[in-house]
Amino acid sequence: MASAYAAVDGARLSSILSKLPEVGAKLGGQPAEWRVREVGDGNLNLVFIVEGPAGGVVVKQALPYVRLVGESWPLPLERSWFEYNALVEHARYAPRLTPKIFHFDREQAMIVMEYLSSHLIMRKGLIRGVEYPRFAADIAEFLAETLFNTSVLAGSAAEHKRRVELFARNIELCRITEDLVFTDPYREAPLNRWTRPHLDADKRAFEKDSALKIAAQARKYQFLTAAQALIHGDLHTGSIMLNESDTRVIDPEFAFVGPIGFDVGAVIGNLYLAYCAQEGHESSPGARDPYRQWILDQIAAVWTGFHDRFLALWRKAKQGEAYVAGLVASPQDEAAMEAERARFMRKLFEESLAFGGLKMIRRILGLAHVEDLESIADPAKRAVCERKALAIGRELVLGGAAFSGIADANAAAKAARA
Ligand code: SR1
Ligand code: MG
Image (cartoon, rainbow, N blue to C red; front, side, top):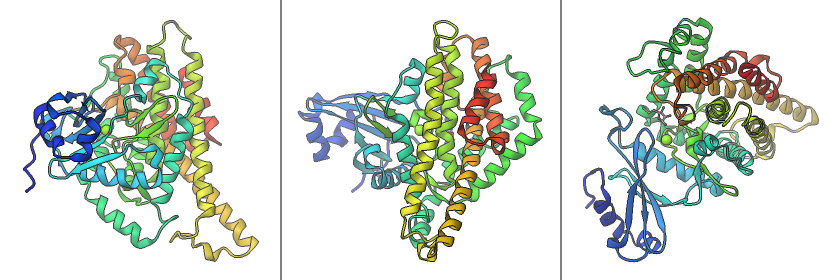
C-alpha cells in the first residue's frame, strides 16, 4: 500500500530509495553508505543529491507550501504530477535535452532523476561569466521541438484536447504566474519587494504607467486563453543545466497548454537580465564587455535558431490538424501558406519579446527575484542595473512592433544600458 505523503529527510529518503532496484543499482553499495544532501535553493521544493559508491541520483520532492514564503502559502503537491508528465512529453520530443527519469511517486510528490554532476545551473554560469558553446543551438532545438510537436500544427485535435485537459488542472501554479508576472508588479501587493529606496520612484512610475499595465493585462489574457502548445511555463536560466557539451531543461512544474511565446520570452528575458547584471559582477568597468556581447549574440542565436527550426518542422509536417497539409496543392497555395507562416512567426516574435519583458520586470518589482541581480551586494550598484533592466523590459513589452528583427531588440538593450 502507498504510504501517506511526508516531506523526507536523509534517512527516510534512503529507505524509500532502497526499495527501488534500478535506483539501488545506480547508487551501489548499501543504503547506509549513501550520502544524502539537501541542495534545493529554488522557491518551491526540496531537492536532494544522493550519492553511493557507484553513482548518484537527484530526488525532487514537492512541499505542500511555497518554500520561499512558508506554510502560510499552501501549494498542491499535485504539481509534481504535472512536472512528471511534462518531463515525459519533453523526453519524447527533445530526449537529448531532458533529464532521465528513474522513478515517479505520485503519493510522495517525488521524482527521482539523473544526477547531472558535471552540469551547472546556467544562471550561476552567467554570473561567473562562463560561455557555453552549445547553449543557443540546444535551447533553440528544445523550444522548437517541444513547442511545435505539442501543438496542433503537428498533431491531432483529439490529442491536443487530451493534453489541454490533463494540464488544465495545474491551476495554482498558473495562478502564481498570473499574479506574480502579469499583475502584482503593477500594484501594491503585500509580497512585492524592490531595492529600496533606490527604486521607489521607479516602482510608483510603473504602477501609473497606463500603456504598460494594459499591455501586461493583454498578455495575461493571452496566457489565460491561448492553448497553443505544452509550455514549460518557467523556462528561466535557473531551469537550464549545462556544461561545455551538454544542455538539459529541468523543472517544468508550471507546465500547461499555453502561449508559445511565453517560453521563448522567458529565455530571452532572463538573458537580458543577465546582460544588465554584468555591471555588478565585473572586476572593473568594461571588463565584461566581451561577455555582454556574448549574451546578446546568444539572444539573437536563440531566436533565429528557434525561428528556423520551428518553420522547418512546420514545412515538413503532414499530420497537423491546423493548416491541413492536403489543402496546399498548387504553387499559389504554397506561396499563400509561406506568407501565413511568416505572419505567424512575426506575431510570435512580438509576443515572445513582450512576455520576456514582463518576466524581466517581475524579477525586479515583484516577489521572486533572481540571483543575477540579488548577488550584487551594493544596493546602489544593483539598482543601477535593475533600472536599466526595467527600461529594457518596458521597451520589449511596448516596442516590439517597431523592431524589424532581433538585432533591433539587442540595439535597444544596448542603448538602454549606455
Ligand atoms: C511563489 S513562486 C515564485 C516563482 O518561483 C518559480 O520559479 C516561478 O518563477 C515563480 O513565479
Ligand atoms: Mg523552478
